[in-house]
Image (cartoon, rainbow over all chains, first blue to last red; front, side, top):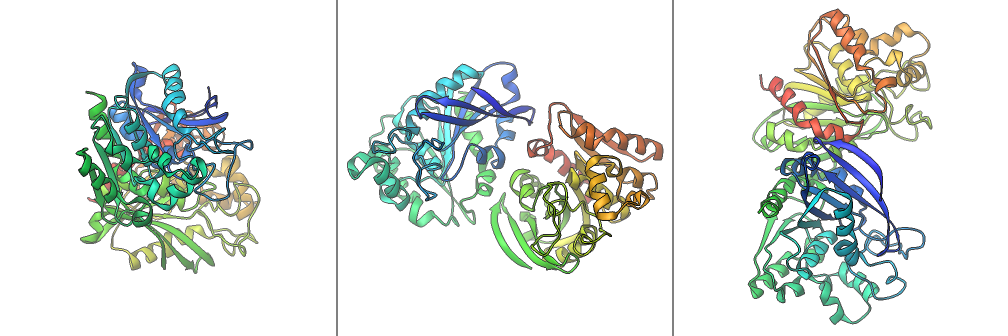
Length: 276
Length: 276
């Protein structure tokens, strides 16, 4: 682990670190925000997963999270969205390959070798964070769009691991919308049954832990009707008696302007759970 | 004036507009934040001037200003930093030409034709804003680095026009530091006496209005010792009995992480003056 950026931010420190990932077989970068409280002792951790086309930079430069992380004393970890590098399979499309890891473990070649973002985020990354930063065992997770999908899937597949979960504009049913169908057919192959292990609406139906799902969704989001469809998650949660709060936000689009507008509320949600 | 971006943001609207500037002889873009209060009636205006290499985008995506503009009910105008376009003189260096207008009126060719950012910001822009947006006559100004220089110079050269002024890491003595010497010799020629009309330390010495200068400066700013030298402004203000508060911030660098960390304090400063 090597620190490649360091900026004082709201009495804490916004950093970027790089390391060679054994899981992904490539060098990876991650954003790490250390709140001022981390100078006194270990703090809980909140993971952020970004959306299509993003790197570790988008969230740390645009979301305005540091203010609230400093207020609540939370370490924030923002990894990249996919494996990277010349040796890593890629595609010219913005919604496939590098920048579009979808937080799953690919099973088809040439993707299976490097595209293991699920294992990276759930195993290698927490171990790395625990080794290098002053953190407690308390952890939560949130994300945006493809990263909202990642946060929800990862929380649902790992009961007891996360204190809370939330998402902005998540892809809740990737097995039934174009972004997910395209990525899953390429990364996982044609067996649609196998896709269900990576679909929030499917996972909710069988969840053993009733972790409440908090979701903010812009009503003016251009991807709402075709790719996001939060009403499908509300229906799946209603059927499974799984607590779910989808808050539709008039006028808001898919951008970081939307994310920043409700960042304080998501931090309040996670801080309440992390400090229990 | 044509709107080319619109994003809901903190119950208000972050927009980008474009227009053909008569002053600059080219198309220009500007960021416009309309707080929720602007839906009820006219609001005061705060101008932001960005630094070297920036466009209208840097401030609106990275500074976290919308939260505080919405809280205080202030319209925020963030113009580009220079004229733009293929017909506009340019230079390969990051600190000259497009992206480096220095908020002055150039007198040497080929710059004099388009590089009139001082006239643009002080005349054309306020008229445009008054015509198209719900604003009162109350206005203040702030900026960063080259834009901090711009804000201070513009406030000092226009007594009675601005209710308050502030700056992050401003270039306070461009006639005596490499960035300013390079730009002024190119835009204004070799007559160093003519340069003094665009130098905050020189202007303070003859200011008829004692508008207090509020400045935040990071102690870990890599440009501090060579380009910024805020102590020169403190000395000039002490000699002229001009109120000046330079706040040195340990650990902070020259980035938007620094700016965002103290944005709330600058808004409090300007809001107090704008609502008098």
